[in-house]
Image (cartoon, rainbow, N blue to C red; front, side, top):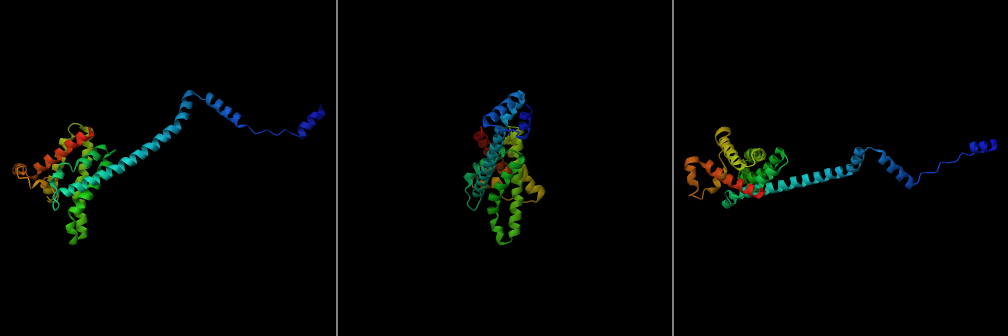
Length: 232
């Protein structure tokens, strides 16, 4: 017996590596020993991470789509004014921008859509000024476009707080900003939305009472109502 003990001490047996089956078995036993809540969390972690990644991708795709549609809206607004003077487009020109502002994830996203539309609407509208001063052309375009940025942010707020009245509130807000730009801030009443209708003498008779603000109100209200119909 002493010899056996000595041999065991001099030649210790090496531990064999655990097999894959034993490791799986140990893992399963460890999972079974975990509380039910921890086991559910352990199973749901990969799904949650995948959902978050997918949500980010959808958010970025939606942001890019909103910016593209806002740019289209800005181009159509520009086409509604002289020199091209495609005034019938003014009845639907704001629909893409308003829809994107309503669907934006935050007021910042809506304001960004307004900025994209403003660049494509007012930079070409004041391009004639670049032959005189490039700095003045850019500054004036950005200044007038800033009102469109504010409008888009207001649309986002109106749509969430007053889902039924937001078209009327949007038209009131638009006209209010036109009044501020013409009478309160800088006295620059150029490119009011109602100016697109100068050929329709029957419609602009309203301006004898309300000025161009009344025509702008009707146009923006029409665009907002169409947007509401599109959004459902």
